[in-house]
Image (cartoon, rainbow, N blue to C red):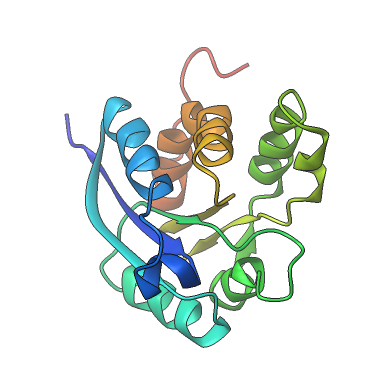
Length: 165
């Protein structure tokens, strides 16, 4: 069985400055690995539109099935990950973001303040997750079960599983 390849992009001024250890990126990597994904790359950039966009384009050029961004999805002025993602994707996958917010409200009503989105760039899914380790893991777990099928569809394998209802 071929493993699906994923890249993780942590978006955080404090992680890039070295004033905070990235706990969310490793937590997301652990979930992906436990679900059969190969982590091809992990990197971090500050909360800056050009840095995020450039990193996303660079990661997309290596053709992972999935890029997960962690952080920068809230309402603060420097939270620009969704805008950077929108500049790179050609189509949104609205259901993924809707599901993450829906499940997130089981833990906190603040989940509805997330501006996270998901979309497609070339043959790559880009998925925005919140910056907290708990929020990132819960959000990823809420959609992990469909990501391989989504990656297959984007790659051109349009056969649907027997139990896809």
